[in-house]
Image (cartoon, rainbow, N blue to C red; front, side, top):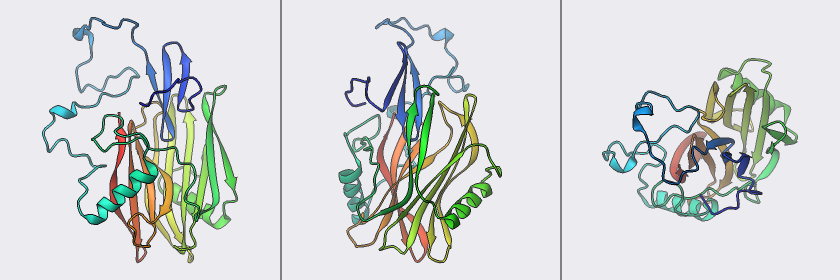
Length: 285
């Protein structure tokens, strides 16, 4: 991780002298200090057998990537980037959305993803939301900004319910609605969350809605309850609408977020159909 004083850094929360949390994507990962001994004696006989699923609240261990076979090392989020178009996209993303590099435990071109809160200047934010951590409640406090068009709200809530979210669900649903005059469509997001003890219920839909109210789903997270500290889900964050290939055409740029794994994706819209034309960069821990 980057050098940081931790105290005062919004990406960190110190809960007590032996416990801190690190912000990743839209969630937090908790780490507990096991010992103050800088050279502890490890008793492997007391440790759970590898693969039995026991992690006692600690982050799930990652496989030893250096010792995996080439076939096992294939990363579904970072396939090989071949061709001129892919390389143009990679260079564009690295320039505009990457911070420190290399970063984390990823490949040599891994990078910290910048905290980019605003899309490009020619993208109009009709509705958006922001979240800040509340130390008193121990939860994120989110505020909806802008006015979500009623028709768009109905469409997105319906799509969440199609993905399993109960009608009149007790949690909070937040919306993003972005518009670029050059595209002729709206880029939209609905994100539902609800804390239930040590778990969290989540659901998400990212969709294109054109002028005729036709909906094209780009990404969705079906309704699921999962551990709040080690979520077994993948969600996405809208980053931008931009010309990533230098062709004058605009693409959708997303950040994919899984547990301790974060990457960028680019989606091209052609003839009303989406196609993922890039997935990569970012980092994993």
